Image 1 (cartoon, rainbow, N blue to C red):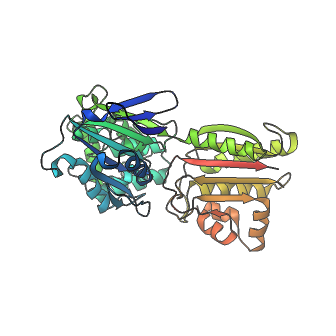
Image 2: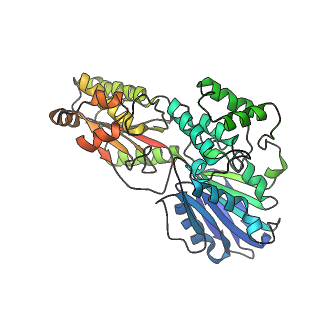
Image 3: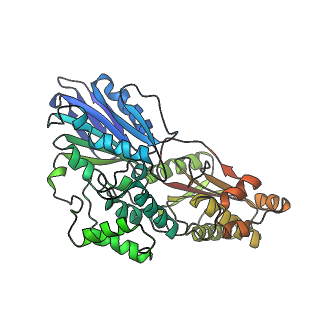
Length: 429
């Protein structure tokens, strides 16, 4: 993707993707605003400012605390993640009230460029009428702990929200909206990324209630939240805007970065370094510890038989797995996957020499930790055992962070200010 200004008789904003191009004549607009939300939105805003410079009238960028950049024309607001906080509500109010705050409202001569990235669901929080922030926080915690997939979590979030599921687009009409999206969702489903604030919502209150029941959470949810969902299911609360709604007539939403593009870049680098590289998938899902067994099985095949690639091999995958919490430890899905790989390798170390496995989040944060993930090998296993550490016990307690803090193996990048799901690398030498 490239954004550029095309200069001729009329200056234009040009968005070039792999197979398409979109052009916006700047003379068609009296004012251009930039708003954004998510872990990567500040870095995206830097690029927007560099392209539009003084043509930007102003705007607001809401980010996870610490994921900031120095901006000149757009204001930064920090908010909570992975759990929303009062700052998340203030950020959402600022976005929804963009036109009101100008004293004259938005018009059809305004262009609002919306920068969307993963994490936006928590960073931008507007509880539906009758709900409190804590209600939504409890719902999110319960869903995450149950092992629900991110699209299921976001479906429920949308139906407890005043800004998600296309409601932001409705609030900013009649302005023209151009949403540029950095995808952290497997499959790049636009309605799931940051809970789809600028796109039609194909899901319904029926779907949200079905997810709650699928995971047996009816009694665990706050009464106000469950009642709101049931009222919506009964048609007593308006559902989110659907395809064909007038709110989307002047709205365009484009994916400008994704896990697939990151994996292609990793594959190119691996080949440059001399590895026989193989890109497996950008859609890895399921339980993190089960995915680890898949990678270990392939590692052993490569080591023994040279398939699906010959040594030196680099297998590359990406996506977003889940962890069903059973213990009381600290960690994240990437550290859990790496620890599961390590524990299984220790149980059966045969043909394990020369294997290195890494799983990490591209945003630099794995779960509620300061680690992006971890890298493991048979050497690390032996070192951990000599220290008296027990990989199996740590895995049982979902305590991968504490294990890697003691054993080594953590990948700590700090905030990367990007976010395109997770990446797994398997080296066999």
